[in-house]
Length: 158
Ligand code: MG
Image (cartoon, rainbow, N blue to C red):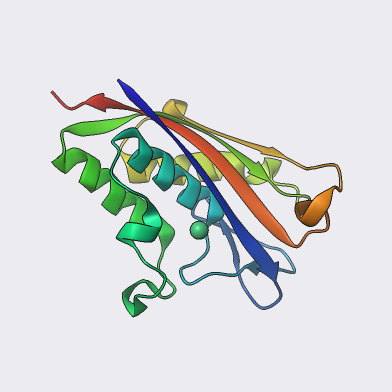
């Protein structure tokens, strides 16, 4: 078994959708980025790539490449899982925490787990997504952005 860690942050702005874990969440602001800016899915992708020491998402899906403009991050996660598979690995489990002052994410966590698990070909019981505020402190507390942390284990395919 191997393990990895991932972290990501995106800025919250008006006029963008808020997509977290592949789920479109109604909110007055959304995350800014070259892709759909799904900060949770990005942190998970980096944790998986970290587990197999295969670089990071900035390397595999550079934000300078027009190919990834507006990209569905769930599709990118599937591509990362295919990279794992090509190298003899499958996803073991994922644990993630989203740091967001608003909106309240608890009602959306089950849908995020379902989407992420389906993209990674694992049972929903292998995918944990948690949410916390930062008690109003700092940039996240001022609702200027959202961050996500993830850890993942990978197991040999055979
Ligand atoms: Mg990102």
